[in-house]
Length: 435
Image 1: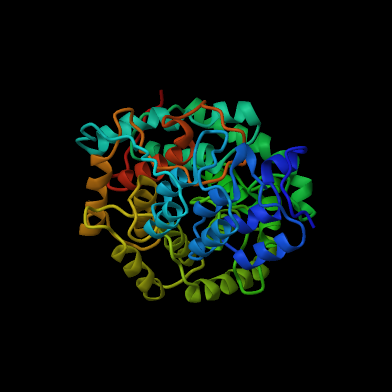
Image 2 (image 1 turned 60 degrees about the vertical axis):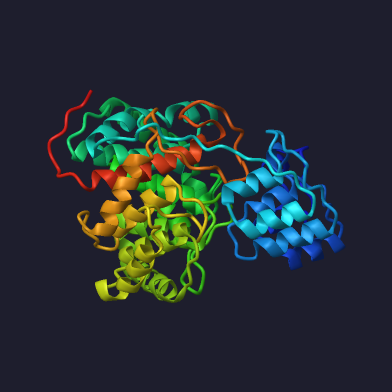
């Protein structure tokens, strides 16, 4: 057992220990067991994120129980991580009032964190897209050069967005798009044999591989031995109940089985393995049964559940209740919040609109969709991006290399991609020009 985090090894520095994992996943009973068997409440994750910080960032409904457990053990509510953040400051990004109240009662100092405010927003979809595409299409290269790996937020979602922009007639940098595809292949080729053998040295496992395949497909990459190996590896991470699961916890993009199941099913659809057709039909049917009965809570979960159902072949009538639920989660101003009754953000709004159109069959002239579009136009920042607050405990060393919004750049990149794709769906297809 590895009860404590350590900074003496690469693994320890990035992953911490088991107690860190139970804090992120809000599992106080297991945390108590680990404490009883030698785990330390001083355990921290990369960049000095305390157990309490990891707990307040949790997306689980048991979050407050975890926070209460830690506070009852006497942890310092005003400790700071290497970035200078406190647990209260991080909790404001999630925005659950009950969590903030628990921290204040324990003596936490209230810290107000300002989110960037849009000046005037964008006047039209075309204006918004023209402003953001130059940012999105180059956002992945600096990160790849720094870490030699592709990411869902800076590479794969941008590849999907740029391909859709080209389809809608916008000028895109085709040479850069080719380079992005090359980055994906260069990152993944070394894991071809490990994937065939059932392991993945790539951080994020099935989530990262699934998003990578989605980005590669958008860039026109054909099926080959590499895509087969990725699909094989993901198939091994399907559980008996039908869900695909992953161990990473980086919300909102990577933490829930709904997301892992959705990107796996989309990948299987994009890159089928002909010789295993019957096997994968059974896998998809099993996933569909799980999806129809599983309960989603966040907008990420609701969206990915509906995306997965569509790719699992669920009928329109089977998907209808999920479409209704996602529509009903829209705020009065047209936005979506990641969790019920908290501050809205562009990630949740853009993703919800994408999902309603692509997987829910909702036309872009639908009143719900149009309200969402107007919110996105009003909330585009002057630099062209959309802002979303980071809620993930860092796994990779952070470098300010590729996208606006500082510490929030990675999730803001993803948010800007979802928002841009949602806007692009409102436009007709037309020939495009490259630059």
